[in-house]
Image 1 (cartoon, rainbow, N blue to C red):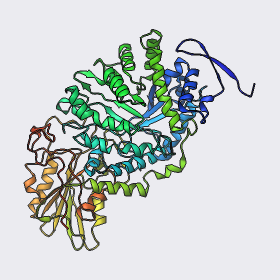
Image 2 (tube, helix red, strand yellow; image 1 turned 45 degrees about the vertical axis):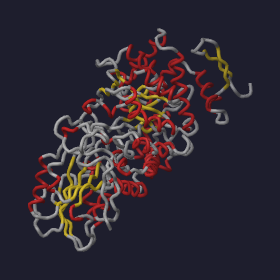
Image 3 (cartoon, one colour; image 1 turned 45 degrees about the horizontal axis):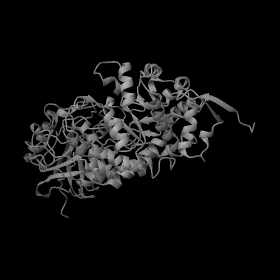
Image 4 (cartoon, rainbow, N blue to C red; image 1 turned 60 degrees about the vertical axis):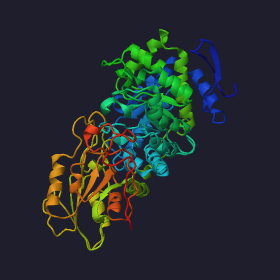
Length: 603
């Protein structure tokens, strides 16, 4: 008997008996393809559909994972263990993984999270600048290093799949996800897709901190009419390919392991049911060999009615989606897909193709050999090294747009500076959406250095820094006033701005109080997109676009004081007025500042 039990199973592809011995798919000496085929031959329909199902952590138990053979779990934005610490995340993950390994075939789960600017759901993690700021750096190597640092922090909490990067090309700044785009032209997200090399490493599974990256959202979500989130991208195929497909082509060349489908439509057809774009273009033409994941309940939008139907399920599966993010309704999805397969409306060849793709990535990641958290990396979450990298990224992302009379850089010695504005001393505001919670929030939501704290740390001991949120208390004795103003946190759904795009009344009143003192006014704009400020700009002496810098606000101060010269260049055309939207490079409109604009210091 050689100590092994020969097991006969039925092949669901043809009904014939397939002989296999032991757990040959766990033999690392075998080629990955061979391991996948041996495992697939042992799997029942229930196990195969389980692998295609992703449930949200708040709607699933360990017993559910074992019973339903679930292949994946995710944390939605703000869905966290209690307490929200790296150790608690690792404990949660390991508990779910033990449940997966209690199944007969011991197939591990893969756990996904939106670590879109650092491991941003975890209190204490390093929060890097959002993508729009990284696009301003024009530095693909910096993006790669950020990807590697993020992967370290994610791996340190046990998780092995990052729903990043977002490779959208944002063509209308009204869109509430503009800050998730590296820029308005396809070349920028294509170049910055280097972050995938950092997330996955030189080879998927080649190190303990290699995790799966996700190119999203396929395809065209940044080009919707009116900048409406989840709207309709009305373009010819040639234009869709020229603008929106190029970054995905670059990501596939880098070996990205997964692709997430967009909520949006192309010329009226929802992407989640678009077989031509998913199977014909992505998988066949571009030769994407990883697996395709739906977005949150994305299949529910195919027919425009609440609640997914059997027709929506089979349409999405047959279109080429391999794994389904069905956060709460995962049981209904399993039952529906099983019925569709048994009725012959979804072929077993499609189920097997999806499983081959998913199992291949799980094996390549080494999940069968290393299923649990490597606790050596838990301490890297929010480490000084990662925060130093984030500070560098913040400084490189700053775009100096105006500097009348050379008011910047500020002198660090014997200076007297007044700081005001609602975003000056607020980690939540400067980090934006997708920080601790889905939409983000104002206040001290996670450890870090606010822009005000950074200014105080950078100013010399002989200098005075005074702060008043609304600007009251300033007088003519100050040498400069810094107004840190702009947007407060938002994410999709909440972030679209169909109307005015200027500063709010609170910001304008704060700036006016500073101006009334006669002191030179420097505006630091914290925002996820260009804002409509042309009418106000002549009243300001300097303007610095800080974007959404994250937790390391001292990087902003580094530029204000000339510790680092400003080198950032606009990743998006800056409108003269909101009425110009959409405005992009080469469209014939005259902007306030063109794409690629950015000043620096002479000395």
